[in-house]
View 1 (tube, helix red, strand yellow):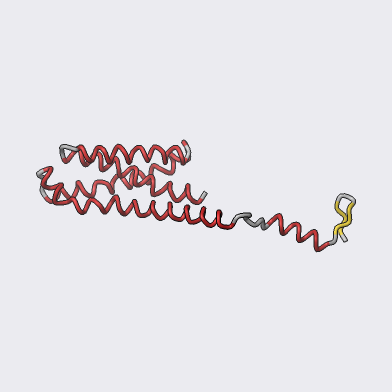
View 2 (cartoon, one colour):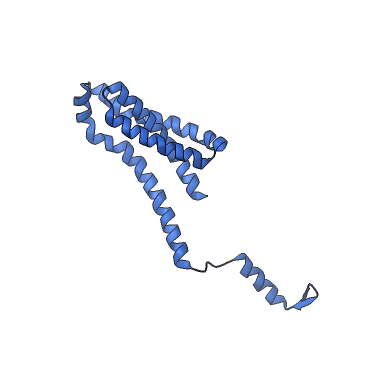
Length: 153
């Protein structure tokens, strides 16, 4: 017997109560399973979008060369310019999210994606297209750093 607040509690009940408090069971297991599946799906889609955004341009290489009347080197830089932005975005996202908050930077990243998509679509020159692709790369790099961090929290 253990005395607790002047009440005698059997020793085994004390440990059972402590275990119940420590290992609280979800009341609705289907809800928690659905939540975990939702989080896993969002994480998978984030990884898919990184590959999709950097890979989808490969289908437009010939059309880009024709649209901007560029040689192979210029067309290659049009395609690869997003990777430069990715590196810069990944480097800048951590310190910026520490200063301004992860959700704030992730919202800004969403705006960057929209501006980049619109700008890439209306570009009339190779230089303009590269600027919008670099800008989009900033968003891709930032999202690739921030999305897993936000999801794990």
